[in-house]
Each structure stands twice: as structure tokens, then as C-alpha cells.
Length: 224
Image (tube, rainbow, N blue to C red; front, top):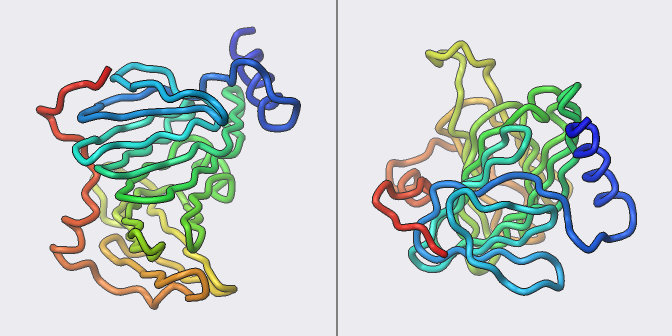
């Protein structure tokens, strides 16, 4: 019954009138530095590991901040310093694993690992950037959004030779009416701006890979 109420509550938030309290869609983890979250029109609140994340929360880190968000379908978003993500849409039926996940990264470094929604139906998950959209097919991806709106987006895994018997994934990056498919981990594309299509895929250099590292620091202290 609780799971059914959860599904109905999330569907109501997405499709119906705004409620006084948005549904909880996940939890924060591995918080370091200062991390703030705010609902639309609401005041900011400090985030700490284990804190609730709600539908349509905008989450932002400071210059030392890092954060993981674990959604109820096991999708994981990680953002690095000076980064911001908005959890635009989350619909999830725990009985069937069907649903929809949409997030918007407006600046900074990000990484995501797909959960049950994308495994059930890959087109159910998308990540929006200031210039472009990333469609995911059961995988791990990451990137960086620069201050001018340009982006670097990389496929990080899993590949066909992974050791966990994971189904190989991929992603489609689209902008300006054109799309690029990336199926090989370690390859990336760039989008120069709103009117620019994604570049042809190219291999990440070690420097590029380091620049999109959003992993929380083990020694980071929680922000209250």
C-alpha cells in the first residue's frame, strides 16, 4: 500500500496541481562542502548525507561541495564543485520499474549511473544541458557544463568487456537538430553552444577525464 501511495503521489506532483509538500524522490549521500537545495519558490536548506530530496528540487554546491543523490529507482546523480542540478521529473512504479527520470544540469561537473527506470525503458531517462540533451541506454556517463553554456559529455561505462556482466550501455547526445551516438566507454562529444551540433565522438584524454571527476571526497565533511 505504501508503494502504491508513493506512485500516486509522484504522479500527482508531475501531472496535477502543486501540493504543499512535494513528494520525496530520493536521498542525499556522500555530501561534502556546502550543498543547498530548494523547491520551486521555496527557501534554501542545507543538505547532509541521508537528507531527503524532493520532486523538482534544485541542488547546488559551493566551490568545495560535492554530492550524490540516490533516487528511489536506484538512479544515482553525482555533482562536483560549483555545480547545479534540477530534478525536473520523477515518475516510478516500484511494481513494474516503469517510469520517467528527467534532470537538468545547468552548470558544473556531473556524473550519473542509470537505475531501474532506464534499464526497463531507456527512453524513460534524459539529462538536459544548457545546450543539448543526453539520452541514456543503461550506462554511466558524466561531463562538464562551462559558464558559457558549452559542454563536454562522456560515456564512462559499462562496456562490452566489463567484469560485472552488466549489459553494455550507450548514450545519444542531441542539439541543433543533430545527434551523436556513443557506445564505447572513454569516448566523448562536445557541444560548443546553443546553435552547435555535437561534435563527432573522440577519445577522452587523462586531463579531460580528470576535469569531469565528480566523485565525492572520502574525507569531506557533511554540510548541515
